[in-house]
Amino acid sequence: MGDPQPLDPDTAQARLWGEAILGEVVQHLAGVAASRAANPVPAEQRSSIVREFIAPPPESPADFTTVLEQLTRAAADSLDTTAPGLLGGFVGGGLYASALAAFHTAALNRFGSLAFAAPGFTAIEEGVLRWIATGVLGLPSGSSGILTTGGSAANLSALIAARHHRLGEDFTGGTLYVSEFAHHSVAKAARVAGLPASAVRTVPGDADLRMDVAAAARMIADDRAAGRRPFLLVGTAGHTDTGTVDPLGDLADLAGREDLWFHADAAYGGFFRLTVRGQARLTGIERADSVTIDPHKSLFLPFGTGALVLRDPAILAAAHGLTGPYLRDVGAEEGLPDYAELGLELSREPRGTMLWLPLQLHGVAAFRSALDEKLDLAEHANRRLAGLSGIETPWRPDLSTAVFRARDDAATSRILDHVNADGRIYLTSTTIRGYRIIRLAILSHRTRAADVDHALDLVAEASV
Ligand SMILES: *Cc1c(COP(=O)(O)O)cnc(C)c1O
Image (cartoon, rainbow, N blue to C red; front, side):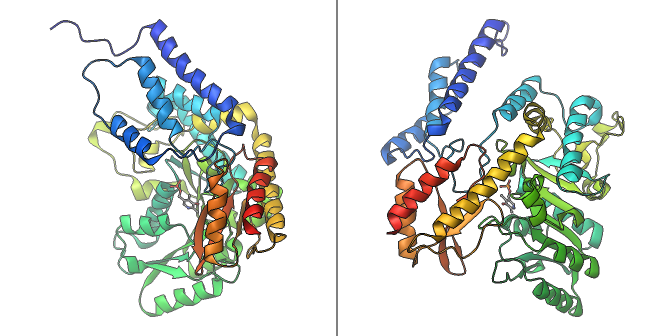
């Protein structure tokens, strides 16, 4: 056997590959303001792309240009979540600086789970977590947590912390309370955590879709009277469908009276607390025991970054913290946490750089003003929609989502099809209380007034 084929390119080739990929990204972003959000390819072409790309890898090296061209085609055959007209769901757009941080971190491949292995990176991660907990959300000092891959993973760890802290090892009879409009990841977390479906009590929303606190109080009392063990109340700071914020202060009061863990799911809405209006609308979140907040939503990061912060991060360690003999040579480092003890994952990248680099390079004020603009745009959309004949706007936006419907579901569907046929704009629909509703979810830093007005012009065309 001769020497193995080198798996590291030489310097010239490393540059060539890197610069080609960087060049392509920069070129895409240069034209992104005019990008189409939906890039439908004909069905036969799509099947041939899928057949080609699903093939197993070659035994010997493929040609770089060919491979890069395949990546380009894979990106082209997709919803363009970097496009400003992608208004169909909570897509932050993907910050370039964050992508660069991800590349840097992956290429250097530092170990992010144990502080001793990379204290600088751990400090970067701990710094952004503390800033999120105290600076953004207003939790007391000492609050911190863990960066996850997204809101679903954060909700799971929150539920496990609450369950362990309030119920101990035997969680028979434990019940939790969520709004009918809560994200399904909470019920999924309960299932994954071993709670039966009947443990998840669905509290109705009021006329404004906010959790009915009096109904929650009655359900908790009834469950206690029946010998169940209420342990967790989940409020949502920005429902996925409508952006509605539950009455967080009242929920904090209720949780306090009933001695329940209070978790706020602010996966979508959390970073709006950087703005004056958002701070007012999210009042009460600072009283939560734990908060889920997704930087890949309202901080415009690329997918793959969620966060869970807690008033008392030690509870997270107690709920998750088991260790193994292979970790015996590691120890506490400068008061920094070992993230392996706070969550499910052991080996993982240092995640903090994906937040830290854009926050350093742009400054917090840039995020505050971008989020303020999204709030303005949703109000603008709501006003224009309310003025269109044949359009109803049943609920005002709390955050950056404006929702509307036509006279009946068939007319609503026609509007949705007309808007999406344009290609530049992509909207989605949902069903609330039996009606089909279209959502205009404005959450990309790239979505500006002209994009929203283009979407509204298309709605106006279809609604006459
Ligand atoms: C998006 C969302 C989630 C799930 O977050 P992922 O990052 O998609 O896993 C949870 N809760 C709310 C309110 C959300 O909007």
